[in-house]
Amino acid sequence: MASYHHDGRDRRAYCDRPPYYTEKPSEKPAPRNPVDLAKHYNRTTLSRPENPLKNLYRYFFVPGMANLAGGFPPTSYFAFSELGGEFTPAPDAAAVKDTCATRFSLFPKAAVAEQKHSRLSVPLLDGSRAPADRIDLATALQYGRAQGLAPVTAFLKEYTLTHLHQNRIPYDADIIPTVGATDGFHKVVSLIGARGDTMLVEEWMYVNALNTVKPLGIATAAVAIDTYGMVPAALRAVLDGWDAAARGSRKPHFLYTVSAGHNPTGATTPLSRRKALYAICSAHDVLIIEDEPYWHLQFPAAPPPPPSGDGAAFMRSLVPSFLTLDTDGGRVIRLDTLSKTVAPGCRMGWVTAHRDITARLAAAAEASTQQPSGFVQALVGSLLVRHWGMRGWLAWLEKLRALYDARMRAQCAALHAGRFHIASHAADGDCEKVSRTEMLRFAPPAGGMFVWVRVLLHNHPAWAAWAARGHTRGDMLWRLWMFVAETRLSMPCPGQVFASTPQMAQECDLLRFCFSGVEEEEVAPATERWVEGCGAFWELGVEEVEAIGEGEDVVADAGAGAGAGAGASAGMMPWGC
Image (cartoon, rainbow, N blue to C red):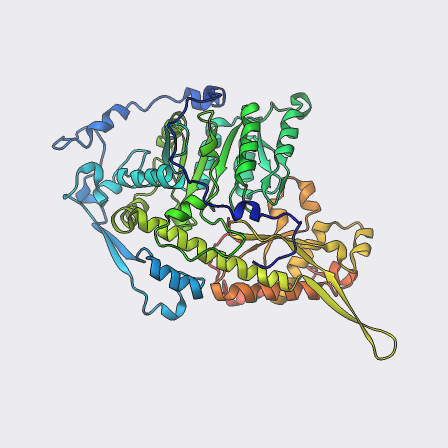
């Protein structure tokens, strides 16, 4: 990768390493410092009664059993008798190498007409299989348990324990399906959080996490992050110096982190730092909520080799999860999702944790969401279990990483090329003086979907006058955002959205660029347009900057007349997730 200007840290220290998993796992040792989970559960969790129907479930699938106990509508009354659709076959090694060498997309536009698709069909009843192994509408659309459709959950569990974590979790962990990672996070916080608690978070964070805990009366305490994620010394300082009386809250007992492809910064926490963070949490009895929607999108410093087609070496190369370090036996609760690997609208994910935690999450789910949509489980389960299989699924993940990596490099190249503002000035005689001013600074992301860019607003010619008039960095950043959006029709996400405190938002000079939100051929041109607009903003005087946003809303007026625009959908969340 090109040597883009960043803060001097070399992330190759962990990106160019050999595979992390090279040895066979040893037998699971006894927990070193066993977690007393009862101390972390809130009153609601501890008082939730066991489902009285739980002991009946095991009889439901006994062959020949006449079920007169459950209030199940008869299958013959279902409005659907078959479910199906076209899907892309799992990539093989040759196809993966060919497409990744030239294109950024799984579905190149020029090849759409020739793209081979297969068709899956989910029948009303699959009588050829045992009841517990069926993926059919009679099972998927019927009332079910929080553990989800058995073959689908079994597939995700095998993937999680054997392939994702390489059998390295040092205790007998389990998984529980969720209606996406956001649902999983809400359930976990509702399990362990109580009004008046404080949750430890990265100082720049995914906004939905903040919006989840705030109505529950849970505050947040920000911990500094850098190119490698949360800083251990900063976490230790927060916990060692916690003054419960001054804060009006007991010392935090749970932490939330996105440690691979962090949203918004793109940081991926290396193994050595994970060990340090885990040790601090163990010493202070803090649980770790590890939210990893971008786990498979970890980018090496150099372009990755062509995908192998089976994904096994790819999975071994990924930075290990906090779960694999959980020698205390229950300190880590991990959230995974299919949103970035199948489709966001699936609303299907899972939690991996100690069995006591997953059992309590299941009890909570039985009184709320129950399980993910039966339609989704049937379609996704048929794809993964009946068609792709584990090898195909791992190959799909490896190919996705290669495609996102190419998009990332295209955006970084455009940002790098336009990071300076070039201005010419008249000089003595026939000479012309040329000045070069740095506008942008960033580090290429180590994972995820975003490039975190600092705009060096103090280098703007009007900055001194702007600050003298009492304006903040955040004020100027918003005007830059509006100016480029309206004049160049290109918009990143303002960094203020991810600030963990109002003070950080006021002085924010950061923008999150997403390289996944437009078609692959538009990534570089859209980024170049933004950089060009930033250069034009650099030529404005202080009065012109102040006037931005005072007149008519050009973008809104254009949108009202022309519809949603290219690449957008009506009702789409503007910043994604």
